[in-house]
Image (cartoon, rainbow, N blue to C red; front, top):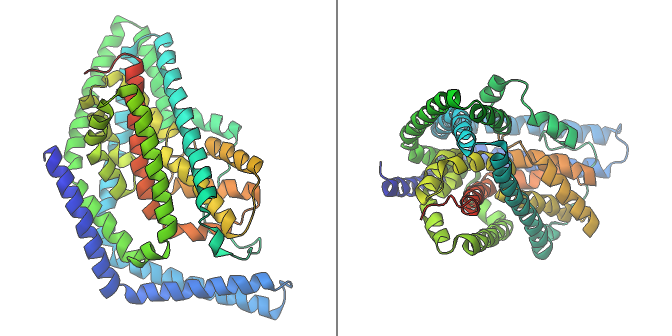
Length: 457
């Protein structure tokens, strides 16, 4: 499948998925969606009444608690039945994402080992690593600050005027509050094979750095290893080519499921919040392009044009990981040396998720605004720094952004139940975040290549 045809097929699949999803939403799933909406309304009503009742042992409180449990059961049953009607559409995207995950870990390991071994000594690795981390830290800070500035400017949550829920009301999202100690411990793999099996990209990167430096250090004997790893990497890239042929089917399945479940009405209900967030991503894209232009010149537009397949794939599957192999190929076509690409890009998937960074401050402060909780400038800066730390190294966790937000807002006495406000639209927002992550990582790789004088014209 040629590059231009793939883009066309993905776009057609995107439109077809929206159309089929809408048809299913109206004709096949309306009864289940109505049950879910009704149950959620009654659960919310019960929550509000429980908050108003001071005595948690009173008959009225216990009655509301029972009502909430019954409605939760109805919602769960309706959701299961609805998901059953869509399981074959979901299977299309699930299989594709599994195929991608199947090749990402070995691709990261083999290419990074080759990249580090070709770079050579520890000083060169340290130099490139230093430049890479300088870009990552700067881009992360810009993304977080931009999210903070825009959410304070737009104030999307202010009009909601929600009552603070009781402390026992939760969101069923697993919380994480990764300390510096936990992060450092998580960084070092207990077992290389365990890291490969669980797709822990950050741990694979750490082992690959050691392996690559050691391979370069043993001289002549290391050349055999480099050749073998290089051959393995090319085999995996060939497999990637086969896997990418299934991308349009995955896009079709993913879009059908999202629209069938949520309907087009979700766009109008949260239209302002979605529009403000996507306009924020637009500003971030422009900033990245401007910085890229200042370093790469007009070639930055060639880079962005070449990435359209990867961006579209990440957007429609809501997975920047799905676009990893395609991004790698496009960067090499652009003129980045394979040793730089295979060094910078894997690191970016753990340290440089620009779209996700912006979303975390945007969503956290949106929830605070919805409950009328005022956070001082100092508190917002503290939140920003906590998010910067806790977000690293969990890129492989499903709904990672929500998990990190749940852990962070608890530190500022913002109700965890507020996550319910964004869970429904999170898949739509995740699409934009994933596409932005691809642009941020590709730009970082191209810029570091230029700084190293390793960018072909």
